[in-house]
Length: 321
Image (cartoon, rainbow, N blue to C red):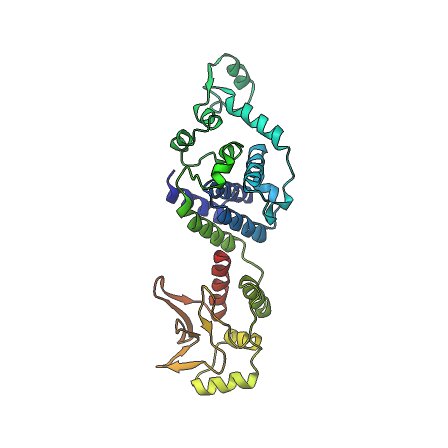
């Protein structure tokens, strides 16, 4: 499996494909992360998918094998995460028997080649059948053979649904060697979900409330007064953009967090060489009516507005949460 190609295709589908395909991509990716032992990243991805799409979690466990896979993983980890409350309980002993039978079932050489219909029904009675080596390997606990045959879209549902292997997966067996890649995979897909399903942040109080929620309920300073804003503008020698004024009238600055600097309140705004410094450290600037973000790693970004910079900040916070 090429992790880079997999993630590129998954992000593309989340951004552009039909909703059912988004569900399928996220469901597969979450199981892929879980089978790599990255249970926290899998939980983070599913939680963000639920928040952004508001679809039932059963859409991620579409079909008996995926539902069985999650049930076996929950048993192995000894707990069900909060997001799984919407999944129906299963009789794990009965599911194990059904899964073992499916792993051992002989298949026709033409199975999956012909479309469903009368011809396929006739052929399956006369075409030679054989054990599926990869599925039989799972029944025998041979993770190495399964990993060698995984392909670009590995059948992680069948892997995780194998009850005897689920404890090893939860413990970090990581047959595909994806554990270190898991955080970047989850982060990229969460960012794509936020781009496709942006939160409703219509008013400044709503946007600040969302940022506070993502920060874990952090408090915000009290609103600035019109007089304080006008005094700052006189000191700076320039008028602040309307959306920045609205921000200050909602909260007079914001403390720093893991992905954004401290946003300065009216008393701390300052001008340097015709540029208004909006943050500490001075990475967010107001220059010639443009809001410029200077990142030593990602480079310089010109935001359409001060509000756009904070909306981007909220998306990054959600990605890091």
